[in-house]
Image (cartoon, rainbow, N blue to C red):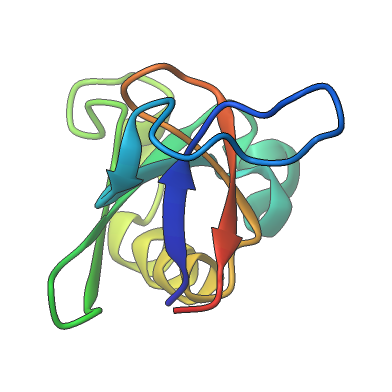
Length: 104
């Protein structure tokens, strides 16, 4: 799992240390890359613990969302967990900016 740091960048695209939201232990990502149109705009959250373990859940209320209710939750969460392991770009849950994953 990569490390995610939310930082502002200068005019040359270099990170400005100490800016932004800092180290992020929860990232968000869209289901489209692994679920195609079936999961387009279905958002997932990945939680990264101190041991670099990851757990994934949907940001949508899967049980009450009429669209998601008919989908196989365990199957799609499994694919989302695999996908999140090597995610290059995610969304910061605090400011909703795109953030790059960095090797840990």
